[in-house]
Amino acid sequence: MAIYVLVPGACHGGWWYEQLAAELRDEGHRAYPMTLTGLGPQAAPTGAVNLDTHIDDVVRLLEEENLRDIVLCGHSYGGMVITGAADRVPERIASLVYVDAFVPQDGDSVMSLTDDYWHQWYIGGSAGDGFSVAPLPVLSPRATPHPLATLVQGIRLTGALDRIPRREYVFCSEFEHTPFASTYERLRNDPAWHVRSLPIGHNIIGDAPDDFRKILLDVA
Image (cartoon, rainbow, N blue to C red):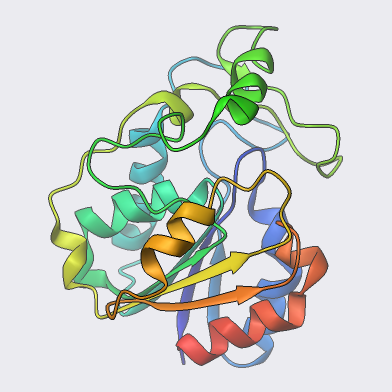
């Protein structure tokens, strides 16, 4: 039996993983799809939520549920979160799975890892209240505003996550304006990583759910 902790991307909650989590459970595994602080239909907009808050969310789950030997998966923005959590509690994690996601190094932020195309969304999308980024129209109707500070704050890493034995990267090559091409090129020949590319858009749940499930089962 494997234990999966699933962290979604910006503007999304645990609902994005609902079907996948159910299928993993049907296979006899445990699955924890997460809704991070400040997201979800009941969340009140606030400027107090930053990247550290979301990293704390994951670490708290692992410690409160005493989860060990887990597969920690992050999609898109979720790569920032799982990186920070892995650096904090590497002894609890067996595998990291980045799905078309950021793989930051110490000091990086979502803003520093993206270009003006994405900055226009982050900054322009937060014009309403100054601290939460409105979802793009192409996202699910269930998407909610995302705390801007989580995209601006630089991550602090000690290098402890390098002790995690398995790291996977899934690149979605048909994602228009992808900010992840340079990450894919950086990791594809790194022997510490298992890297694959899928000819799909960014929404792997919608475009290739069977491939996604198989990747997670293979990792376990």
